[in-house]
Length: 279
Image: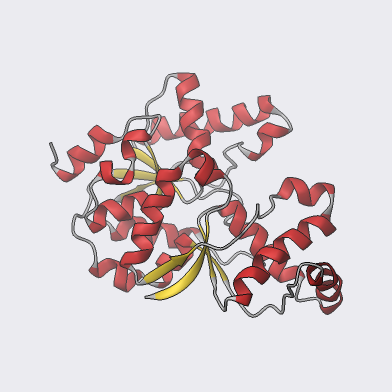
């Protein structure tokens, strides 16, 4: 197995550990040995808006820790992959890198920009032929996709296109269902600034999803995953939500309960069992 540094971020271990379980199982099937390093928070874009120099130094520390071990990074969170790739992009500037390395030197680190960062969905897509060979249980249901903001933007930094998610979803037998505002923010990041606007956004999208005929919603982002679950609990809606690695792990042959699907706040067990013919 080829080792990679696994960047789980803060959110998944704290609130959604079963998403990490599914991701690790998928990566192992694809020949990756996930390595856990002493990473900190990525940190997120809220810190960048308050103090970009500190944000950049912390992100560079994470990059440098993996670089010291000669490891590329696979990130499970769209926000984390966005932060690390944004920092990597900014640190191509020699002056910025020199300034950051002055800070990193205090803790015995330096960053030269020699390692790569990939969101797990991008990594799976890079290995789509191998993934396709591992499918044991093709799944038959209609799925709408919410890509999320941070995996797509800024486009000059993020290596992503919506067709990539379509490919990955169709690969495991699912039908992609369209709806008007697929690219619209789910509202999660806005909640810290204006809860009312955040609620309006997620409700608009959920109403569109209800009309789309989708059996479930699939997203590559854990924050979006939780936003849709919590909003539905508040609104009394019941559209199952999946983080993409959960679906491909099930298609690879892992039992849903082994992956923690039973811990979803919007029950997905009956839908999965129906799709797979399980009791």
